[in-house]
Amino acid sequence: MLRHAMLIGTIAAGALDAAAAPAQVVMSRTGNSRLQVPDSANAASETARREETSDVTKNDGPLHLGIVLYPGFEPLDVFGPLEMFMNVGSERLRIHMIAEHAGLVPSSTGGYASSIAPKVEATVSLADAPPLDIIMVPGGFGTMQQLQNATLLAWLRERAATARFTTSVCSGSAILAKAGILDGKKATSNKQMFSFLASQGPAVDWQKSARWVEDGAVITSSGVSAGIDMALSVIAKLFGTETAEQIAAGTEYEWHRDPTEDPFTQYLDQGLQGLTATTGQDR
Image (cartoon, rainbow, N blue to C red):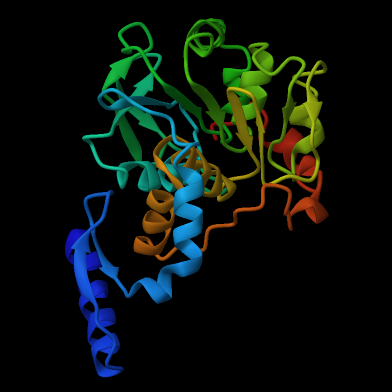
């Protein structure tokens, strides 16, 4: 990543030199190299940086993020946000992969049963997890089983009470809803399975059209890739908009910043027809 970012900075610097504009590569607050261009080119973004100063949470030492794994989690639900969070840097954010029991946890997608899917190591169990500032619960075909996992639901209720933010991606919001964490709050979820997932929390104010929804200390995202946008919004809140922008640029990701802009509402509940076929299977 560092060499990749430095290469981008070098190419961009060369292009600016050819245009007779002074530029140099400097170290960003993420710890990665970035291009520093003349103040005239940064006039608009400089205003945003000044505005962010009062919004960024002041932290003493690194924050701790716990990503909850379970059999049949959706890979991109985890690894999309994980890529963004890792680029914050370990000096500011420590990441813990957590599961009910430490060890290898199988993932799953619609076409790949968890019995043969790639596995990810959870390095710490629920019981041994350290104090967490941020909790993230992914979705996936394994969500169905976790809706009945009393151990996980109780752990989430306990830990959400002390976390700075409790977040979910895709159908992970149904798990938070089942735990009662979303009661009385606005939330969203995967669009193709929306009505079923929303039925897990009748006391939740479900938002059908939303890329992600923030309600106090709880942030829920729509399906799969929406978790990346949510993660960047959390990073902006905790570490500053400039940091989030640099991470998005470094990963060549187009950050969708408007949480109300949801192009996938048109697919609402279209996946429900396949729900019966997949429920109870090894997915």
